[in-house]
Image (cartoon, rainbow, N blue to C red; front, side, top):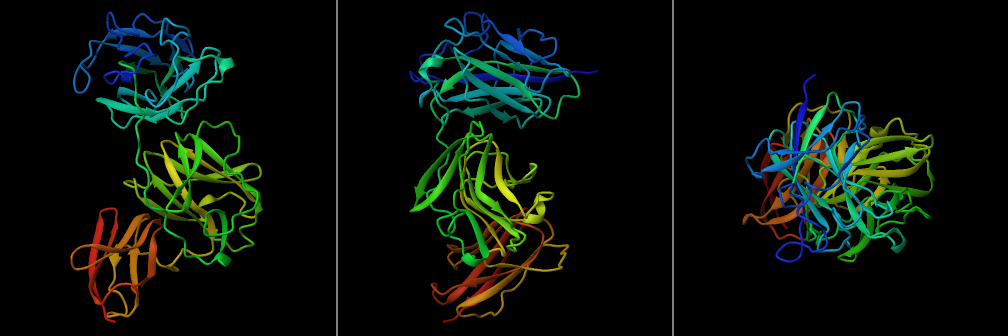
Length: 450
């Protein structure tokens, strides 16, 4: 059986003096006279636990020309969370305080497979807030991964200071099909990476309150007693902030996070058909939501369409996508994934905002139809067809090319749709409207006459 070869390189904790943070013994470069090569690394949960080896860099090219790296052999018979850890005390990483000057860890990886790399920080008495996992996206070449510990806490005084790093080089719960060889190098702590922050509030919902059961929104009355941050032991940091007067929920360093409803919801009896969520993606590459009914019975729907980043995305998910969850007794949510995400307007509804889906339509091509009526005053209907689900934007521009309205910006299922565009606040003139989704883009003209 052949080995899969994975090279992990350049885990960096960058310091505050000339980019280097004092406190940690770093960079961990495994070079002679540097840090890491002489440390006491213990391998765990890896069947026979072959030791960590320090070897010549097997591919000194690209972003890594380092002379030596660490080699970790992840055995097929080992656990998915097999890894290695430094020694507690002052001789290896050394004690330190986690703050804004050292909360970013970087690691360059060379891997022949895609799987998560995990990093965990541990105190002298074994206290930890859990690991962060980041998947590599490239194979057979060096790649740099970034781990943001900005939302993590320092241990309580009784647990001692953080003084140990734990590395999970090949964290794949699906299990390995063979032994994987992994290399890593050059660990540093750096200043906190400030990811994007939304400056405008999420779109204000327009669905009548009578057609909504709300979980989290300033527009509606939310389910009484709902707990947006239950103690499920997750490492995700939950916070709330005001954006243009609108309460927004932020998940930092997401691994998983729950929401417990104040009471079970009989969505079937209430006629609910969709789950609506507005989210703003700062740094996530994986985000999913679960509905949960007693059992527990749960089902996951992915929320991050390709390319959706640093803009509010509105998603209306058909509740039928959550089968086999019992829609007559939904009592919990769960998010999982990674990165930093902002959320707003989480609610169940009987309709999708102003967008109407034409029933029993199965389009084979993308189309954007001419608005009707045209010319119009002050509103008109725009129809379009989607043969595949995807993130959809429908925007209106004036003749100078300036955007004057975003009619749709959400993930939509396949089908034929109709949306009403109200131009009451625009002056008379010729406008263009553009539909974009995936590789499809279409533009048409319309005339407003008042």
